[in-house]
Length: 91
Image 1: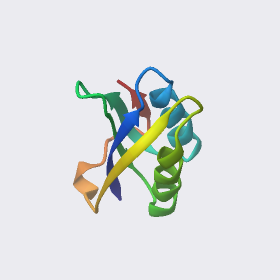
Image 2 (image 1 turned 45 degrees about the horizontal axis):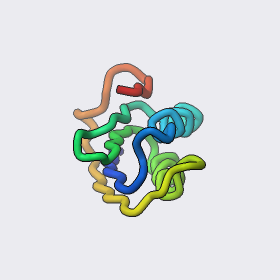
Image 3 (image 1 turned 60 degrees about the vertical axis):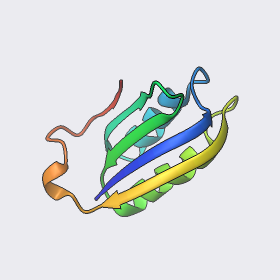
Image 4 (image 1 turned 120 degrees about the vertical axis):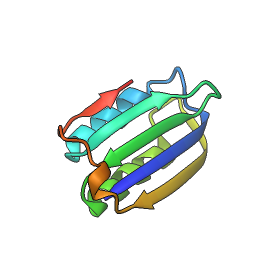
C-alpha cells in the first residue's frame, strides 16, 4: 500500500521532516519526506495500511513548534511502485 501526503501550515523549519522520518522508521515504512518550494511538506510512504494510517495520524499534529493547517492524503495500491529498499529518507 502507498500513501502520498501533502502537509500545509507552519511545517518547514520546525523539524517536521525528521519527526516524520522517526515515525516512519519506527513503523517500518519505506519512502521519503521533503520540503516543497511552496512551503508544504510532501510525504510518500509504502507499507502496511495500519502503519500508514498511524503515520498520517502523526502528521496531522506534527512536532512541537509546527502548526498543521491542512493534510491532503491520497491512497493507492501501487505494488509495482514500492521501493526496492526498506528505508525512509529525508530529502
